[in-house]
Image (tube, rainbow, N blue to C red; front, top):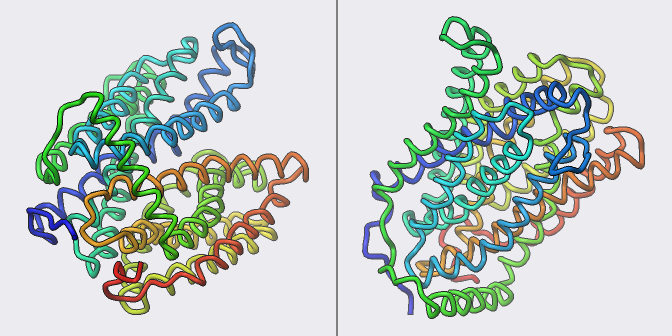
Length: 438
């Protein structure tokens, strides 16, 4: 028997509240993960230790490697914790509470980064670790709301709305932070460093502040139960039950395997594109930041374009088309030589990156309709996402060491996309209601 939610699906206030969470948390992804913090981290640690090596709890280690291990370690920890917490969220009605805990953890860690000056490397790394856990951990609970608040025919467009709001909010926040950093004295800051640290504080404030919209309006989908030994036991049983369901659902298995390889390629490109421009094409930092902004702006168009195409042609056709475009982008990157070619590639990446939201919308369509275990189902999506996000860049880096060139590693990305394409080809996602086919 299917469980019917006690609230109306496709309700505008709930849909807008859900999408606003993308607006709230995407500033972390752009400012901390991609644009400002990595550059700041490298600069202040080199200045503090007069070397590319830092002393971390008495051990000498490459600063960039330490940061990479930190982010990778946070993904690994979330991958371990998410399944169990997802079962608890589904059985005990703790979805919104756990979403809040992860959000406040990540946002407060970002605020704490204001005090990181390079010398206190241990504090900076621990805070970066906690911020990454907060962001990554909150996503699984956020995404699990999607099939509960919207009908299948609205999933793509609603997912696109959230994704595009995330792009727009992060752009506005980043532009404001860049203005502060480029004119620190005009805003009362002592130097560029203080203005940069203030941008991290703003990330936390923005993240907490705008998250309140989702926390207020997103419904409680199940009556809460007290935390006790029984809750943890039942949460584990809930996860095992969903795991058995997943192994018996052909479409879901095909999607998760295909998505694993597809995401390995996507995340490698997104995390290493600016490094490619710096190392292979010798582009300066300001042009790389311009490229990041270009990706975000074009991504807004890509989000709605993917939703439009999926409405006309279906999710499977759109996912396959996006994968083919990613393959073409990789092949073009092999022969890239000029700055103009790099920007043209950035536009292409932005378009298909914007359409990346279709993966989560497709997965939401594949899980059983009106299931009470949406968080547990999405924990398997989240595990696939985190593992592929961690393994993709690592394998890319290993191949770069072996081949001696970032271009040589691009061949691996092509192979990831080809394998993903093969699995997604056999995916059955009709345009309309599809959950019964599972």
